[in-house]
Image (cartoon, rainbow over all chains, first blue to last red; front, side, top):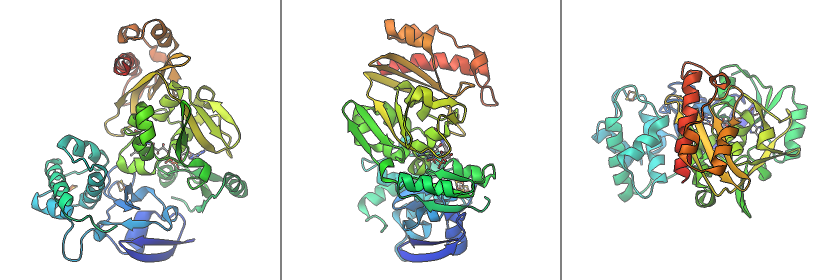
Length: 162
Length: 265
Ligand SMILES: Cc1cc2nc3c(=O)[nH]c(=O)nc-3n(C[C@H](O)[C@H](O)[C@H](O)COP(=O)(O)OP(=O)(O)OC[C@H]3O[C@@H](n4cnc5c(N)ncnc54)[C@H](O)[C@@H]3O)c2cc1C
Ligand code: FES
Ligand code: FES
């Protein structure tokens, strides 16, 4: 067992967990934040994507103890109170989801992509950057459209606090 | 995953001592291969000793005409390093093709090189550039470091500290990726180095990463795609699986080598 201390969505948390506890299980089971999903459990699909110290990672393939002390942002941490993050709004406006299972991971990755491309995004770049996020429903078309729009909106809006 | 104990090593000595104290310990890099293997219960180390916080394993520096990459550097750090982009763009470009952005944010060069997956990308860069692997015990030329599929010259308690890449006159990497796994199905790294041309192939050899002496000789007298496009590879030396037959891979080596030479210019 180890004590793991993290800042999750701006809140300091600490739990005693088995060393083998995956970050995604820490987030879902120990903190009750079930917005982060487990799709494949084999680091392929990206449904479990969260930000660790501002960088997108697949939380099904990281131990909670490995990132002890880090700042973690999950999908629950993006909105500002009742105001959705611009990327969340864009997914709603542009119908970037069907069943919604992949969506938390898609949005967390989308925010990461925008941050890494201050020069702006075109469709080809978005599709390439999404190679680790799999969607079984949409055919990606509206996801790409949502990210293009979300990126434009993020340019003007202030970035989510991380 | 079976139960395991996790500890961060603060120095090389600390890591080696922690491993010695463990029943059946293993070093942990970014975990992008090892944790996945443990989740499938194909590995069950009693202890994981995280080496990524050891100061000697951090950072990317330019030392004369060599780029030195700390073993704990993530694939993203290599892909985004301004020094590597400027002096050895083939390496930052290669790193940017590994897996996907989230995998690149955790996976490290040391972990990839230690693992020596036959479909991994870095081994081709190390062999193609005649890189030197420095460990907690000594140093190895790439040639002597990679000894077979998932096999290296490393002892159980030996840590990769850094990898030094001499900057070549020109180089290029042509990756033919498996669209599902994103690993190399066949990829060819070519370089014109101070000691002449080098051609290294990953993803295809049944003994892991390898050089193609016949192509190197041809390029020494004539650096052009034509010089290699007629050189065939023996399918008996190739991997064969559901993703590609040995004949298919042998054919790819020649095609990709020609493309890489053309790309290097
Ligand atoms: C979805 C996915 C796609 C991928 N696609 C690609 C790809 O296209 N190309 C590619 O090349 N790779 C690919 N990978 C593998 C990825 O590059 C891994 O990051 C890499 O193989 C292992 O690095 P790691 O730091 O995560 O090592 P770990 O998983 O932590 O460790 C791997 C092995 O190396 C040992 N080790 C780690 N660090 C050291 C060290 N400093 N000294 C000695 N031993 C050490 C460990 O004990 C272990 O045996 C992919 C992985 C995933 C999950
Ligand atoms: S659940 Fe983590 S990548 Fe699919
Ligand atoms: S919306 Fe159903 S998996 Fe993407």
